[in-house]
Amino acid sequence: MGKLTKEEEVLLSSYSASSSTKGTLFFYANALVISLAPIYLFYGVHQMEIADSWVVWALSSISTAYLLALACKNQKRLLKHQIVMKRGPAVDREINGKYASDKKMTTKEKEERALFRKNEVADTESTYLSIFYTNTLFLTIMLASAFFLLANVAPIFNLLISTSGSAALVVFLSTAKN
Amino acid sequence: MNYSLLVFLVVVAYGAEVGTQTQDAFILAHKQPLSTYAVENMDFVLEYGLYNVGDKPAHKVTLDDRHSFPTNSFDIVKGLLHVHFEQIPAGANVTHSVVIRPRAYGFFNYTSAQVTYYTDNENLHVSVTNTPGEGYIYRQREYDRRFAPKYTFFLVFLALITPTTLGSFILLQQSKSRFPAINKKKST
Image 1 (tube, chains in turn purple, brown):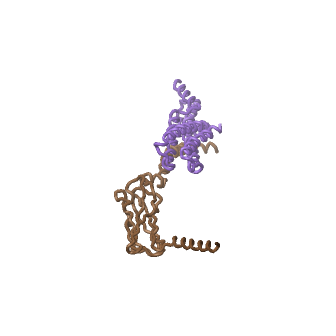
Image 2: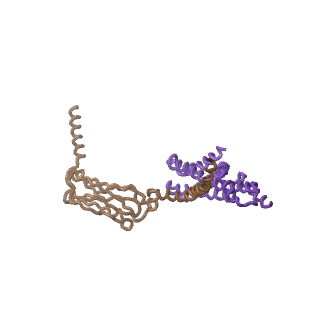
Image 3: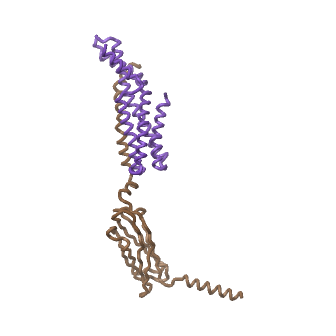
């Protein structure tokens, strides 16, 4: 019984809007890498020097990383429910097959396990999908603005607008559907 | 009165005509870099032009620019900094080019080259070319940074963004492929 309560707690926490610690860490690590990569491009292609522009770089990378992580979290919340609905039947089948021989387990217990498993699957899948979606969207907007729309703007403004600006746009898009 | 004015005009016009006429050989010389950028350890092309605008040929013309490019700062890759032309006929021109290679970077003052020639066998004329003036010799690294192709930066950028972006996509596909078969059965 105690074990079940523990599972219930985990179940409850997995249903809540906040994502798991592992997922959040993944979000922040990804956001950091994705926010630093454009700076390398600006260093190489737009010829910004480290000594002159490290302050702007720091500003841009911190704000972009924060915004991207936020966008990922929002996106995940949107996607998780959809994925639970999509994967639900398949996960049910998997759990039923797994515990078919187990006579001791009640139907209720099986259902709870299936629910738990559904959440687990949806959590990881929505994490991956939100990262993939946010990254591609951000990078596309960023590259288009940095090298086409704002190609002739002074590098500092180009950097700030194309990185932080696109990240803000991605955040906006991730909340707009709510 | 009118006649005297007319005579005066004719005299002045003749005088002016005589003044502008060059009876002797007269050489105009120019010196200009043909390369847009001077970069350390990269070829730099200079061109000298000699124009004889006089009416007689110039003899024993020498062009000397050795003092402009001291060998401790420049390598001479091709051509001579001291050339001799036996004769430049009236109205003819000569161009001469030299390829040098700067050894160090920084500002460098390009001075004029010296041209000497004889109008007759005795009359030695010494003249100088224009001075291209102060120019900057780029550091090799600086030059590469500005003008080298940038695709390596894009490749590194791709390498930076690929692990998380493509990685998450592949993991998603794996997770998807674990379920759809059963999913299909259920939905149909």
